[in-house]
Length: 396
Image 1 (cartoon, rainbow, N blue to C red):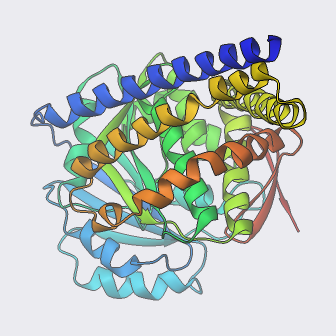
Image 2: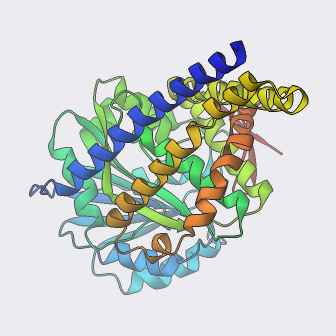
Image 3: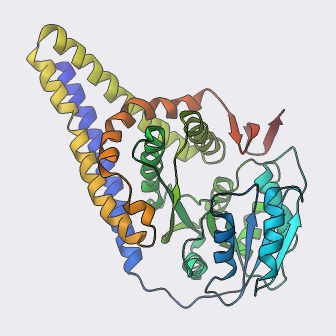
């Protein structure tokens, strides 16, 4: 009986927390999508750090250069002229109708290469730049992307506005399905004023706020751009504003090793640069691990003894799964409207997504808890040891 009551208590806790978070995000996205955009178009500089050629590189860069925004310029930054992206950028810049610069940042072993590229680009800002926009080369999805991303900065209480990424996986790629679910549950925090965070693939900030928050100094010896920026902004009591219109879908197929590397990187970066959010993820993982272990214990006991209390315990615990199925169905309808131009999202296998839910319960809590025992990440072929927010070591 005790196990049944324990499982019921854990299950009710899980259901209550998940329902509150999902409902908050659902209402937020619905409200934001219906809100008319204000006419706010300050002079902007877009900074795009490049390393290698992401899928759709040329197409996405071309879309960036043709944005429906009247006052902006673009600065591309690479580590060296030997980077595969450099030659493509030179060719793409020839047909640009806006001011474009390509800078070579070199290598700095005390910080991540992406940040080194960004800091080098910041040295080339025009004096009349009012807003800084940081993007990745695989996220430009619509002609009004810049307009939507910059518009929330019209509110003085907003420190940074941000988009987000959804990974879309094929039906038979189970590791990628797990990442997709993990990533989307993380998106629930974007509607929570206390834990919302900027995403480095698409974020905009007023130049005056960037300087006042001393973001460049925070980046000097860092391995992360977006979470370190987030904490710097929140120290000024400014908010992070999630822009659903700037949500992008990316192809998410990968191997088990690649998914583990990606998940570990996200968690370690959060651990170092946004510990409050990491502690929240660890707490959630502990609860889910307790739920899973209780379910396994109840199943073994029921199989060995046929105790009806153990059977009731299993039924109590299983209440989590139908609730999460409801979330999945409602979320698909919501995101389909947001990602109307992203055919990949609509093609995603519903049955595989459903089947991935119990698999996620078996795997993801342990992947999350693994971040407790390490501070090493691997990012684009480079291994980093993150010793503190201001100390990053490139591991040979």
